[in-house]
Amino acid sequence: MNIFFDVDDTIISWDVRLRPGVDEIFQQLREDGHTLYLWSGYGPRWEVVRRFDLHEHIIDCFWKPLHNHHARLDELKVPFVPDYTVDDHVEIIQAFGGSLIKPAPMRLERDREMWRVYDEIRAFASKPGAGE
Image 1 (cartoon, rainbow, N blue to C red):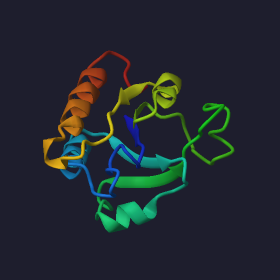
Image 2 (spheres, one colour):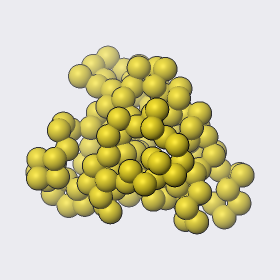
Image 3 (cartoon, rainbow, N blue to C red):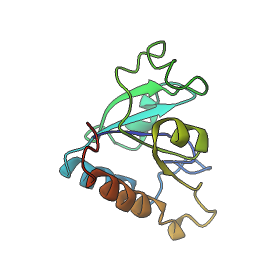
Image 4 (tube, one colour):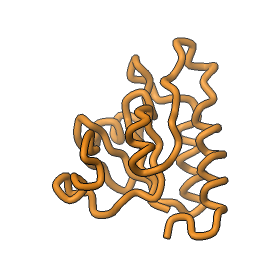
């Protein structure tokens, strides 16, 4: 599946730290055969890929459509509709399907959201026709 992750409050915390589990979960998702992308309402976030050394996991980065979600994919040069999204905004999940993630807690070491999301992705991917 082509999985699109939001950046702010999804893979990085409010104080710009990588959430616990991101690297491990991205590695496992790739081993499971998925292709990973980042998108953001602030545009392609290659600086996040560089800062947190996510090059081996992330194939490409895009602008995320914040309204008229499907209609704007072409305009924003997103080459296909995501099979699954992970985002902290319910509107994106409603538009494309996926996992709604809670923003990271103040005590980041207690954050387990990425593992929960991984379990949801695995469950979705195991359904007949997922990602087709």
